[in-house]
Image (cartoon, rainbow, N blue to C red; front, side):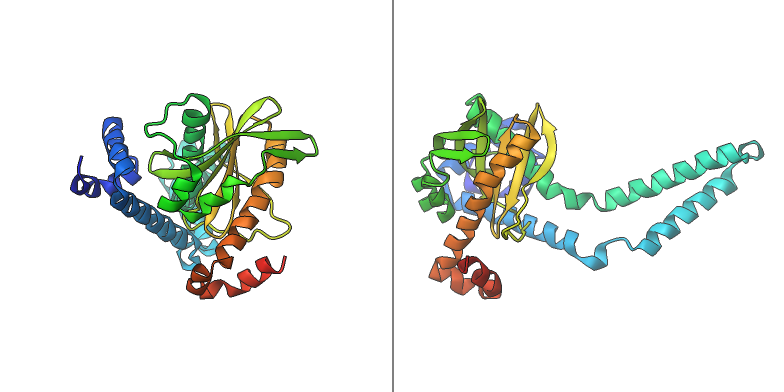
Amino acid sequence: MNCRDVREVADSFLCEELLTETNHEILRHLDTCPLCRTEIDARRRLRGALRAAFTRAPELQPSEQFQNRLRDQLRDVSVRAASPWLRSSRWLAVAASIALAIGVSSLVLMRRSSTIPTEALARDAIGDHQNCALTFRLVTMPVPLEEAAQQFDNAYRVLLNMPPDDIRTSDGVARVTERHSCVYGARRFGHVVMEYHGRIVSLLMTGNDGVTSDIGQNAIPQMIGRPLNGLSVMSVNGTHHAILLVSDLERVDLAQLSRAVSVPLARRLDVSLLSDRGTFASLQFERPLARRLLAR
């Protein structure tokens, strides 16, 4: 597969609409073509930014008046369409319940796009953990973090020494066993493999697709996506990167480890990013955030 072929199907690739064999061909090409990797990454970031902007736009959200009007109209239609024997109080209650369910379903569909970024991110994180840390079935070979930092994202360099090899928590020690960068689907991760409470845990760093949050002193890790094959994903979002922990640990243990590892890492990433003069100059609009971070 050549560059032209990859770019023609790039959007379908990002939407996961292609056959597995085609995906493998594309990934093999991306492994050797930095120009196409840049193109795919740019498209992925643009899609994420547009999706995030759409879901955050107040004017695109259904108003309370619309929700109430939709519920009332559906209830009226159900009553008018009902036959005489259906107009007992019991069946009216059923009809109203059905109408309300339809209205709620419509609202869920309207807001579905707001769940896509985190759902997709969680699926990719679980897939990378399974294929890289557990079964070693990656399509492309992992690369050293320094090489990944030079070719893809300077932020991967932070993972060379953070988190430390031994991370002490209030409930034990997590030990780092591997550090590298790897790819799952169209997403590249910085990957730190750890052992904690006898379980394998993946710490993954990747672009956050425009979903940002304030990582202040009271930052709280959030569970994202749905558990899959017993695996859960705990996320902390920085300005430009998401820090994810994936494991089959109990939720309380995963959250505790995330507070000890992911929150400090997200803060360090933001400080490192804003300390770089070139990046700092290009992010004029983030000066208030920069002042808060550099003051800590």
